[in-house]
Image 1 (tube, rainbow, N blue to C red):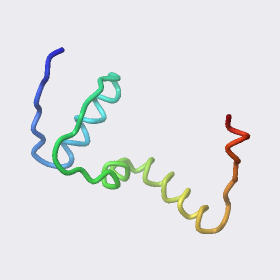
Image 2: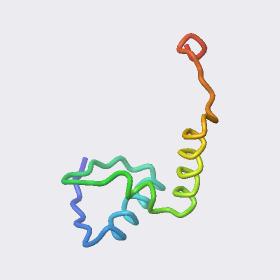
Image 3: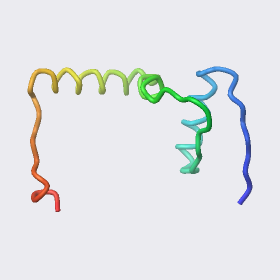
Length: 71
């Protein structure tokens, strides 16, 4: 296995690199500080979906599932 270090100069580059690696199903490990919230909200479509889901949770529009139903 070869290790490649790619220093991202800004958050836009970091996001683009992560999206590229995700699309190729390449596993990667982040070093240093990363704000996962910023990453998740970096895509407008994802941000809209997450904000909608959080609003539904605040309004009690949730589905509760017991562990017995999952296993």
